[in-house]
Length: 202
Length: 63
Image 1 (cartoon, rainbow over the protein chains, first blue to last red):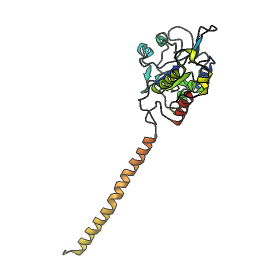
Image 2: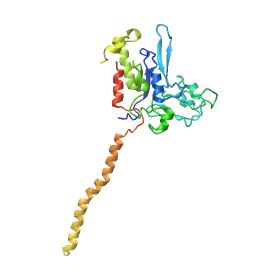
Image 3: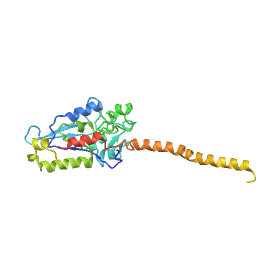
Image 4: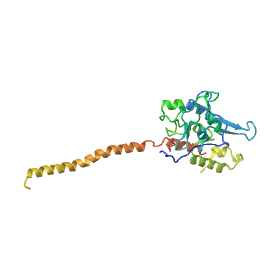
């Protein structure tokens, strides 16, 4: 059943659950056959090796009011009716403005260099492909797999073993996270194997 | 009344018209109905969909 624009595609990372396994990064690279040197997704760890360290998986967060869209001089970006931020590699001039504007460092370029010599920008597509025909060879070559057209969700979230990374309709994702917070309480002290794997939240 | 031959032909014409009209309507409506069914089955949006796959994913995340 199509949600017909009623959904709002969102990622959410539960920092209490991320174990820094990098499976999301690997799954993304494998599923989309991302070129060497480009990481659409990466895991960032804060306070690595110290008590209370936290890891989060970061990629394009598909901002509702995306700054990359605002700064792009050639208007390559567009938002689907579900809020997924996509772009056209045919139009990209590789200026890098989007990279500087993005608070998550999501836009990636195949080459290092000055204006115009970086190549076409590449970023997470929420596994929704690009402007080409759904699941066509051209779409896969430029943007990777279009799992959304297949009625699926981003591979990174589906592969996450602890389900720290959630993806899908924002209201559904927020509801899952809310249930987790209610179950484990505020802060990491209330979290444990029992609450994570022992019982389901009613 | 005074011309039975003309009367018969008129009746035959009316009978044929009565039989042909529903068939003609069916012929014109049927392709549209089929197209309507196809259109309903095909995803109207390229965006997120509520499928068995996504439901299983959300269920797996609720722990």
